[in-house]
Image 1 (tube, rainbow, N blue to C red):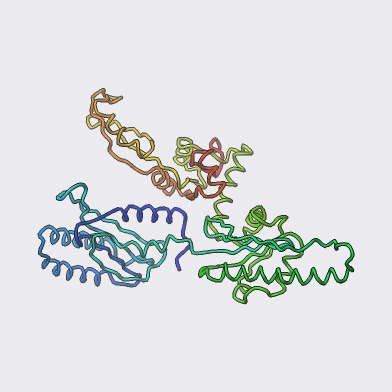
Image 2 (cartoon, rainbow, N blue to C red):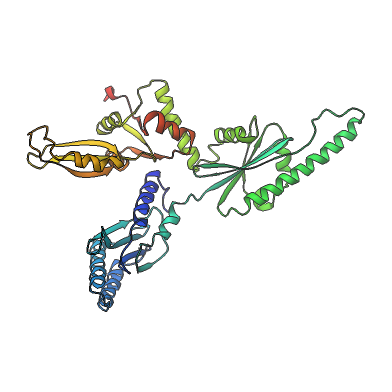
Length: 420
């Protein structure tokens, strides 16, 4: 197994898969090539040369040329590798129509997976076969939570960043104070029988909810008071779920509030759950901001300055940022400047440069030299300066706060800017 997948790796893979999914070719002109670890590059190149020869039998002149050109391009990319990377190698290549017939442009995508792939695949089709890579971006770890007290029980799952309350049931058991006219012992016996039946109902619900989850990593039992211990010791759960109990947590509540308490109190139990990780990262940033320690900053310009100064420990970027960084150049004097804008504004901005004077030489020779996703641009800057990068989902409360209150761009610093 490879090292832990980073949020940036997952984000990059997700984005490129979205791009690949949107591509369509003519006929069977798009090549998908999956090479697992351990294969020899020379063996793959020999196979592709055979495929190039076979493609000479394609009747359509255009299709034949496009397929053979794509094979040549893939071979060229393979020659850049001395050996297949330890996680394998995936290459997509083909002629993608840009508008109508005859507008095809050869596009090549080389991906080193964040985890080892075990499939060897070569296929020509009208689409790229991305399904085997899509499996890698699925959250694989799920935790079950059961909150128990004598009056109700709550069942929830935490999978990656997603927390879902699956079911809530009530017991109907009266309080410990007996009704008038009943002897204390008889009342206690009846109540104890009702508790046993309620525990059986809880177990039945838990078995139905959690046993079908193939990737269930663990079960956490929580709740106020001793009832949760009585339930756990009674071995009501299916043995397969009992084996997965990884912690018992005290909470003041059941229901949604109790689930949030579990998240607060059990991060060490569920340390691999992305939901917990993201909350801790954003809360660390909020702590520094709230106490004005000088060890945090936010906003594109401020964060960019901190990155360029090399003082960023962790860069926080909201996955929901939809901003493009545009580089403008004067083709006459070479003057260059940058603008950041919403992705849908780029076309209008490009058109607005027509007839606009260069701020340096005054000539109307400005044009867009590059468009880059802002997340990717800042992430590359962070990587170049040795900063950690965390892509934060907007699905958590903290993720929403990062996006709405701080523009989705923030940084935790190694030290104050003036101490450099």
